[in-house]
Structures are given as structure tokens and as C-alpha cells.
Image (cartoon, rainbow over all chains, first blue to last red; front, side):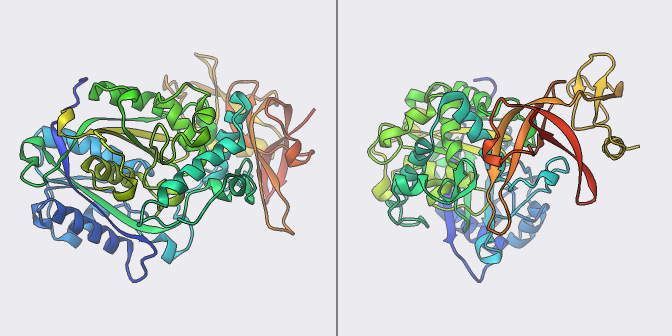
Length: 383
Length: 118
């Protein structure tokens, strides 16, 4: 168990709001709508929340502003910012705090209106003074350097990267909430305009608005709030660097550290997992994370995703929402990997439902492969 | 003087310098006040050999008339890895594993370390 309170806490409310374009809302409004939906899902109101976990695109003191917005005075706040993985760190820390009795109802929230506000990916950090003079595109060139190294070392191909984008699109076509649902063929991904070699436009995540929220309580009261609580069985994180030049090996991410710890906490192994959500900011991410989390051997991720293996009908359902590549990407996608895990384990994922899903893995990425965080969820049967 | 400022001052005087810990002998880059890991503050400035190897490379594509350019990670012979640009050859000709050598150019009114093939 390594000290983690396996199955002692559960998600009892989960929601999204404003996925796509949401003119007429500030980022904080979107986060509020998602939070109200998640709280209603858990038969709770804002006044019931005594722990707030939040990371907003440009509001570095969001735990203060969002508390004021909701009219709450939480006992515990966590403003941890690690990039798009932040919400999985929030999840880990919320579980520890709930289990220790420091709080009773934890809300994890996020909202962004980047698409309607600027039409571009919101940058939440300053460019590094040691990288800026060389004018890398932020953040894609850093991921491109990782992809180029993976291709050099393991023979991974652009077509294999394209398999990731096509699989995500095929899942998105089954998700009515997904932003990009038109047909996407392998050749169109391979031949798309190059942005930072080897990554082209179709290797990149979307730029959208969107908000998400989840509500957590201790397991013993979870059934009072939802008929199908989703239990947190393990959660672990790792930081390896900030700038890409400081990443020890561009083909191995911190998921190789966070993943095994989360699996050990959960008492599970990769083969036990029914449905996987990984933060696919770029196509190379999915390949790196599937390797580092142990779904295939290092270097074999490219071959692993071939032939639709992670697409609908494939052996391993990955990014069933459509992911950051085709569902939505408001800037920090981490919380959406959690919400989709909950939807799959509750059995409420509609056309894209993975039948009989009992164990789900969500994995967040922050910075430029810098922060990695893994969570494993289960239904009541797995606790 | 701030470590970064000292690094830039050396570059302005035509020297590519790296920090090195007297106790461990390990080189440190980017500049800072202590060796990563050990926390040793016994850092001195040593002139870099300038030798390096391309660890990874990408081409940043531009809309014409702007031209595409290279961004690379270079493993310095002394150990540290840094982001830089390989110049003197077309961006598409830059290869992982290629030996390169540092030179200092002036760009945007500031000295900058770039690399060229031997």
C-alpha cells in the first residue's frame, strides 16, 4: 500500500461544461458551472465544500478567487500548479487530506476560455531565458525533440504517430461532446502541414474552451452522494525537469516512476486495466506514456498503437473521450482524463462505453513532459 | 554578480564558459548558485571545449517569406545538454549524433552560442 489510502476515498460528482466554444463566459464562470454540475451530481451545494483544489490558466491565486466566487471559506486549499497534470496532483493530495480527516468534501475544478478569448493555447509560464533566444515554438518544439529522439532510437514512424491521432478521432466520433468529429485518415495526418518536425498540425491537440470538476469524499459516506461512487485506488506523481534540455532521457518520462507506484498502491498491473486516459497534448505523448506505464515495452509504443489497437474495437481502449487531440483541449487537459475515467466506470459513456470496465487509469502530463501523475480508479467491486 | 549575468558577460567577451564544481568536478549548465543534487556552492568558471554532439533536432516551420530554422539539443563534451541552433547547413541536414562545435554570434544585440558542423 505504501501508505496510500487505497479505496478510502471516492469521486461522487463529475462534470464538464462549455466544451468547445463558450462565448459569454470568463474562465472562472466556466469553472463555476462545471463545479455546480459536479456538486449537483453528488447531491451537494457549494456551501458543503470544505476543501478546494484548483488551477486556472492565468489566475495564480485561483483558490482565493474561486472560494470568493462560490461563497465558501474552505479549511484546505491547494493551488498546486504543475501544468496540465495539476489536477491529478490535486486528486492525490485530496485523497490524503480526506483520509486524514482534514476535510470532508473536496472540490477539484478547472475552467478555460482560451479559444474564445485568444484563439491560442494559453501560456501559463514564462519562456526559459536559456531557450527563448533559439525561438522554439512553445510547447510543440520540445515535444518534437522528444519525438525525433524516439524515432531515432527506436525507429518509430510518422505513420505510427498518426495512428494515435486517428484512434483519438474515432473515439471522438462516438462522443457527442467532442469538438473534432469529422473523418480523419492516416494519410491526412502524415501529410498535414509540418509545424516543428516531425510533428505536423494533426499531431497537435485542439485549442478549445472548456471546464471540468470532480467532487470527492471519504468512501464511508460516498454511497450517500452517488449510486456508483468511483474509488481512488492509487495516485502518484513525479517531476523530472522544467525545460526540455534538462530532461534526462527524452524517450523516458516520469510516468516510468509515477506509474509503477500508482499500480503498487492499487494492487494492480497494466494488464488489469480496462480503460486508459493519457494526456495526449501531442501524438508522441500517447506512445511515451503507454510504454512508461507498462502497457508495452520501451521502444515498442509505435508498433503497439498500429492497426487500431487503441481505437474503438481495439484490444486496449485509450482516450475514449477523443483526448486532447479530438475531444477538447482548453489548455490543461488533466481533469478531463479523470472525468472520462469516472464516466467509463459508471457505465455512462454512451456509444463509446467500454463494456464491463472496472479499473481505469488516468495519466496527466505537465510542462514539456516535465510533470507526470498517474491515478488508478475502480468500481465498488475492486475495492 | 548573478550567475546568468556572469555567463553573458563571458560570452560578450568571446568566451563560452561553464560552471564546474571544484569538489565533484562535474560541469553545471545553465548557470546557478549551486551544483544540482549535492548543493555544493564551490562553482568555478571553466572555458568550454566547444565540442558537442546533436542529441535531438527539429525544424521550426515558418510562413514564407520567413525561413525555416533549426532548434537542437546539443550534448556538450563536458556533460551538460543545452538547447541551441545548428547553423551553416540546411535545417533538414542536421542529424542526431552529428558532431558540432560551438561559436558565438550576435543576435538581437546579444551574444548567443550556436553550433556548426566541423
